[in-house]
Image (cartoon, rainbow, N blue to C red; front, side, top):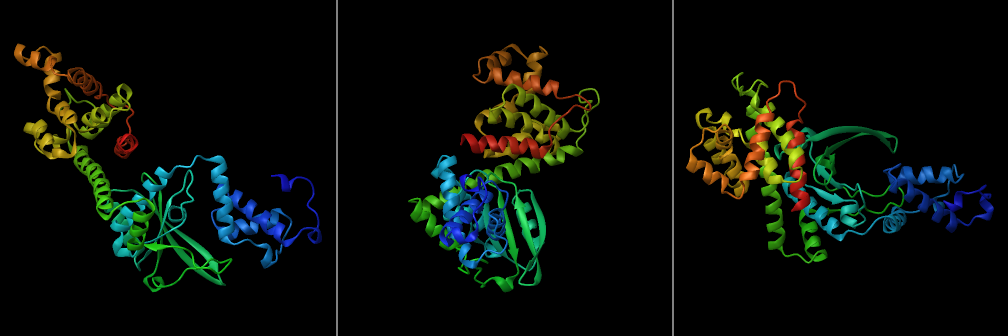
Amino acid sequence: MSFLSGRRRSAPFVSATKTRRQIANLAARLMYSRQESEYFNAKRKAARMLGLRRPKPSDLPSNAEIRVEVGTLTRIFEVADDGNLRAMRMHALWWMRKLRGFHPKLLGSVLTGNIRSGSDIDLHLFTNHPLAVQTRVEELGFQSQLQRKRIKKEGEMRVFNHVHIQAEFPVELTIYGLKDLGFRFRSSIDGKPIPRMSAEQFERFVAIEHDETSDSIDRQLAEMQAACDRFVLFQALLLPLESVVGSPEFHPEGDTLFHSLQVFDWARRMHAYDEEFLLAALLHDVGKAIDPDDHVGAGVNALGGFVTDRTRWLIEHHMLAHRYRDHTLGVRAKRRLRDHPWFDDLMDLQHCDRNGRQPGAAAPSLEEAIDYIESLSERFD
């Protein structure tokens, strides 16, 4: 940074306006590079870097001034992505609806529009039971981490609870007690209220900003819910397979979940970006925890309309593929399989199924497998 090169001139030769601008620019750089995450700390560190140990109030820029500088850095170093902002706002609205019982308020870059790579969705929630928030998040099928921070403010030590959620866009929930529900949070520097919106306000805001109707918003959120429900169902069907152990002769690897994860890993090596094929590999044996006598039919019925026709067909015929390979399938049945447009995919699945039976083999966790396929779904949808 050019204004840091050489020795800084003494304070009388530097105007308050220039000092304020320098602190704003340097604080923005600290926040943009994620060396600091809070405005107050960024301003204080920036002032020290400029040789001001005790800056005057007039030397310190407002949060809004720093946000402008961060926005400038974003425009310089990053390509604007209005589609990503819109997607993050739709996800924020989805979370606000799902957490409605905790009176969610949105604030931060998703609200102001100053997002960049790594930005998260910041929500304030209000409840006297922070663990209830984490429970609700896990009920929705997401992993989360509860973090407690002790911060001294105005001479008083306060504990802040944060829930960090790993999702398509990371989410940070800051939890306050119900007594703070009507409190207007203000900047510790300029004393101005921090912009934030309730779910109802934010929905109207999204409709205006992105030219959406209430019906179109409801439809998009319903599609997001369907996708969420789909992967929650897959995980629920796969988890019981850990207690299903195959015969040592055909399945020396152990439980069926371990087998399914090995099959998925082989499938990923062959067709890394084929979501339908990967789902068939991961889900082909889910029926074994439902009806061991007809695991194919039970699995197909359980999956219902949550998989595509191609994934369903591959699962439905994966046992016939083994018979085809072993030459125990009738001539007509072999011809029907061979003439089907997905026959080559079916034989690839059979290959993965055969190879996924190694005792002690390296395999991804269930969470890793689900996350991988879900990321493909989000990327290519």
